Image 1 (cartoon, rainbow, N blue to C red):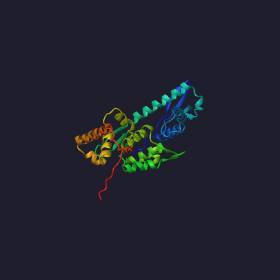
Image 2 (image 1 turned 90 degrees about the vertical axis):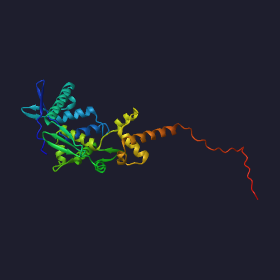
Image 3 (image 1 turned 45 degrees about the horizontal axis):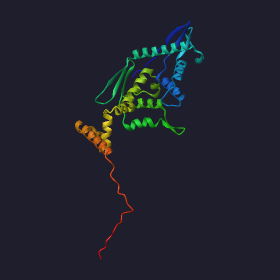
Image 4 (image 1 turned 90 degrees about the horizontal axis):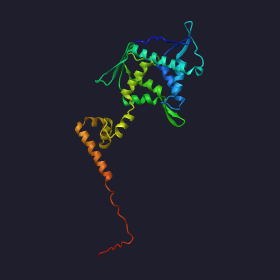
Length: 275
């Protein structure tokens, strides 16, 4: 696994001034995301305005006599100039992605993937439930009585644990990765071991359509099967069981409740004792 190497800054000129735009590393980008999220009081939702401000502040300098000089106060930049600088940063990011030539190869036999780039190859494997939880537990806590996840630190741990091979990168190496490569690796690691299927499954359920995960959960909950046992069932058997269980549940919901015995004080009970 080779080092990514230096990324040359992009130069942009306007009104006689040349600006030097340097892309943040993946680690620097995660810091920008964290600071933007903290301004919203959320761990997973960034303040877009703050994010762009931090991007410009950390990525743009003036070019004077071939050397970098401070950009100056961000809040005093003309809005259209700030927009141009952000646009140039987006172009630089697209150019870097093209240069890296990031490709993904899925391995059906192992369930893992290989991410290949012009700077090296990265093999990722799916984690066990325990491994995934170990990554999460190190970066979860309470803030003001509310559960809080250090999302960036968790993602770094997830990538580090998912990477396999003889030369696993250090934490510093991961932080120094080019931004597009770091984001590709974390997306692949999440897809392998920590997807976010809630919206997808909810959409299927609301549309009244079957979803593999819903059917699997239904079989396990209704019939006491383990996931492995449910997956081993013949497809027709699994489908018929789920349909039949659903119909039974619907039928029971529409049946009138059984009448409850009611004691009537006007009823006289006569008890005869045989002597």
